[in-house]
Length: 288
Image (tube, rainbow, N blue to C red; front, side, top):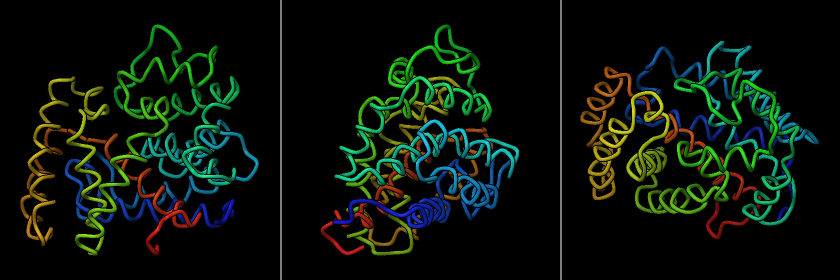
């Protein structure tokens, strides 16, 4: 097994994961078939290219990677396109260069994050200014960090699925994310449908926390419930392309209502990035 990945391999894996996620019609989210929420697929491609060198910078701390990637993105597209992606993929990129199996290396990476990492991450979140950010009574990201990321993420975990994954070893990614991707790949071997299956899984599994922040828990739960039959329908058929007209209609309806399941999309990118990292680290039984 290759113990570590080169900077070039990491950047290639990250950009490829972002490309794969854009290539499928994720209802409510931006993709190659339709923009939305004032953004287009090209904004995300430019964001991935801008963020990759910072995200994968050798010898950089976790906080430096996160803040550098967010700052580079803002300079390129002047809006928040990838904060959640960066928060999930920066630790994965750092862990992939640490040696050992990826989940264990990730756990060590997250545990080692110190106050300086927290302060840089707080600055990154404030700079990105994601929709529905609001203020917090404790550990507000607009103030200097006074606790480590582990403490801050644990406090946010109940209202933010990305924070929940930080405190649970990226359980969504290493568990159902990878399993859904592998099952879909084995079933279809088609052009990117596995990424759509992963997205629909995350959308159906728990209320999307980005939707909840912007529209409230009731709307987030209705969106989650609507995704369940879509996931079942997709996984039951042999030809996912047969569902494209109906998927496009649902996509348009969600965007008309300004509903953007961004957290589900972020977790999808993190899963696709992890698939590539595991292939590069030669930990998959099947050929990549």
